[in-house]
Image (cartoon, rainbow, N blue to C red; front, top):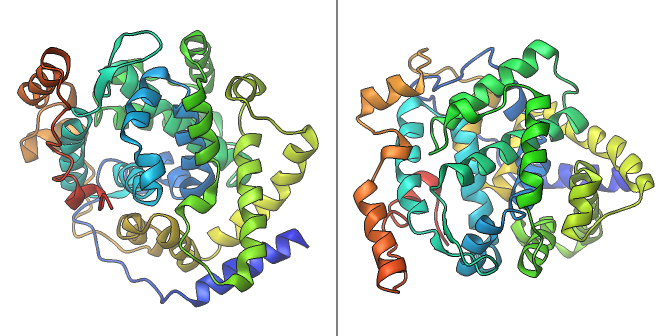
Amino acid sequence: MLTNMILALFRSLKLEVAPIEAQPMADYGYFGPGSVAWKVWGNGTTAVTGIQRAVVIEELDPNLIAAVDVTGANYDRPKTRYDRTVRYFAAVAFADSETVAKMADVLVKVHSKAIGIEPISGNKYDANNPESQLWILLTGWHSVLTAYEMYGGGKLTPEEERQYWEDCARAAEFQTCDPADVPRSSEGVREYFDRMRPRLAASEAAQSMMDHLLNAKIVLPELPTAVQPAVEALNWIIRAGAIATMPRWMRKLSGFDQPVAVDVMVKPVLRTLYKMIDSDPQLQLAIVGIIAPSAVPVLAPYLLGVQPRSTEVLTPGEGRRRYGFDKPVQAHLALRAKQHARVFADGLAPSDAGLIESQALLGRLG
């Protein structure tokens, strides 16, 4: 009954969206056909459960929640914030090499603004800190893989899993973290989370933010009254599905949990829904168009099988040399120093340098 209601909602939404056409990319970017990154990140689980899980878990880092909470952006403009997040992650996997290189560069400028004093410890935080960037990278890639294996394509083979984490290390080159710090196995990732666990905390701000981000309705447009019961049912299922992917210690730390029976019940429902989504690329694009519209042009060529103008696959180093960008950890050091001086020496708010510029690549701010 519940599954049928949600399936009917998806079908009705599909009818309201015109078929999407894809424009060819300039090249295959940094992964390309046959990569495990494409296999996992192109699944319908990514844009919903995968990214939702990632942005929820991220808030357990005291430095990250301090940076996010001070802006209020997740409350004031949750749709555009989620849209930009999905677009960035999707672009790293699927966009052409120049677009990704430009995004990585401008993201350093955006993060130069996310600095301040973490209120509990009194320590400085900086979103460009390599440790913070590694946390964001691994929560994203681990969450997307967890959602894929639980609700999408199923368990990767040992060789696929090894390649997936090699792909993650390649993606690390577009952030300020060191690719050498990326674990190359699920065991290594578990060890990373074990090391991070004593450093994580669920403050009142973090718990409030996590609960807010588990509400999928914050990224939806207004929908007809007739489909509201299905929307409520879908929202409950998505929330329960995200929680079901989290270990018990993380749920307890975060202040939310659910019975084992709910964990068991939600799995076949979401597997059915995602199987239907993955069987129809236009439906998958229509759903992405509702929750993260700026990611559609990035995903469409992959989902619709549109070949790029060049079949090149570059390494991140080749991309930087070709387009003239520094490694993110070395990029815009003068700007970052000015931001530090404004905030920590002069007591001023950081400038918006890079934030406006980022809209052309990462999507509108509002």
